[in-house]
Length: 330
Image (cartoon, rainbow, N blue to C red; front, side):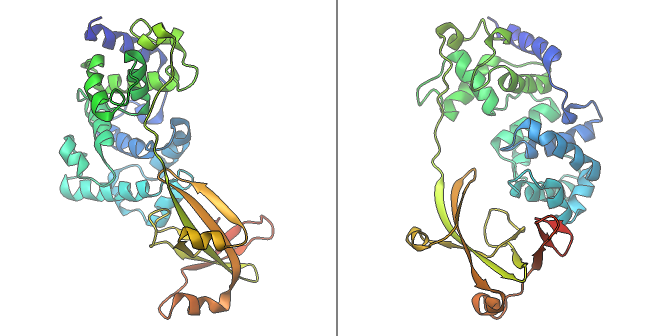
């Protein structure tokens, strides 16, 4: 089948089945660029349904690059609270500042310029170029990769490598409606070609799909083994007051408030007796020992002469939540 016919079939399906997403609303080109930028940052490591309400609230309070560049970190993090991966929010603000200072307030439309912005790599630059600027590019996100692997029945280690997938995506061809076409392929992966129990009977590519002919839908992917890191969290309290500090030490939860923590070696961690937490993150597994045997009057001795607490919180008797100066609930 000609690639032109493939794109027509996919776009016909998309026009009749696409989801109504807030960043797809018909608006000015300037707003489209901003909406695409914000949504692509939010969609990194986060599912669409989770992002929708956060995006809508974010746009209401932070409607443009100028507002984004000047908003306080505290307000920005409040708008991002619950999405996780807070480095995305910090990079988004840095990107807004750089666009205003280096690109005259206009989102750049070339890959090199986009990749010069904080938090934008190969995939995000491709997505912005395709969706915002209608460039004939097919971004390879997880959904599009899955469609490609199944349609072409790619199984071996080399076949599923990024290098080969980048070559094989030429199967899809291009379209003058590049923005819609890129989103259509993502949409097929999200709604039809699901990781488990794909809805093949609804798929516009069912006649082209080798996996369907072979009745084999298992997807092979490269397994990433997360690093395991060990931490000791020191809990200081005095009459239901808890010490929190601004995190400028670790890359996770950067510049947010955390309990004082130290990274420790595995051997020391295993020697601890008491409560432990296991937290899985995208790039590491955190094992945290909760050390409650710390008195507030020993803080200076532990942190040194120059240490100053960032904020003190307390337990609300009514809601049983940790509050910071009566403003932020934890």
